[in-house]
Amino acid sequence: MKIRIVRAAPPKPSGPTVVSGRRFLLVWVGLALSSLCLGCGPGTPSPSAGGKLQVLATTGMIADTARQIAGEHAYVAALMGPGVDPHLYQPSTRDQRRLREAQLVFYNGLHLEGKMVEVFESLAKEKSVVAVSADIPEERLLSWADAAGMHDPHIWFDVALWKTAAETIVAAFCEADPQHSADYRANGAKYLIELEKLDQYCRQRVEEIAPDRRVLITSHDAFHYLGRAYGFEVVGIQGISTETEAGLRRLTDTVDLIRARRITAIFPESSVSRAAIERVAVDAPVKLGSELFSDALGAADGPAGTYVGMIRTNIDSIVEALSGESK
Ligand SMILES: [Zn+2]
Image: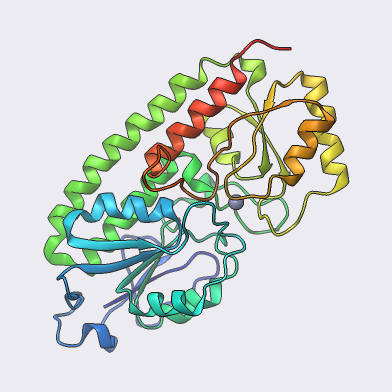
């Protein structure tokens, strides 16, 4: 059995079955079993050496979420480690091999992994390749100002949206490994409660910042979902993708905004060059807050080494920097 989830212009199903009424979730039933699956029953991947499902995710946020849901039944690895920028990421030969060997692949979609679209399309011909953004209703997605018809991919910054991504991951595990589906659902339900608490934590902490001080200026446009969910105005010096560098106009506009609004702190990001934001900080002048984890988790053994830890660390850093006395 193969699952292919795509967003934007999905192929007309001719033979595939559309399940759950979700127009982007197409399940190809009865296609030839992949080489990994020879000898297994339909829908059951072959056990790997350790008897666990071998899963590969692109970003650390997806890999961590998948691990929480997989529990003991899968080995989940991330392609992109701390500080890695997914917009620019090009898979190495080793990565290509890992992608071929994995039994289930998760990616963000919405062109976050802009250089890997062809790789996913090719992989989807032979295995389950799942975009975790696929089940988020289109009306909940923000548009991508620089690219007509496309959506902002930074969905993990609205915890409510990430709950939908977690549910997509649960469904994919159940599909790939039905004999453990009860465990995947139970782990998923537990994790959703944790995400609900995280969402509440963010809302409570933001209350510590005076309403007129809730302006978040960062290196690139990663935080619009956070802004919408928790009530910040958001300004990214670079665009939504880091592919284009900040123009001089955008730098001077940002400096003007900081002065006019008497903003007390702006924020560098862990996966983006600090050059532009440091220049703005000097020109304004304004304090640089702690580095925010934008498109990658922090070190595995650090406070931002999990999705929940990343979001908490960011909110704590933002509140600490913006809730102080104005200059
Ligand atoms: Zn980004």
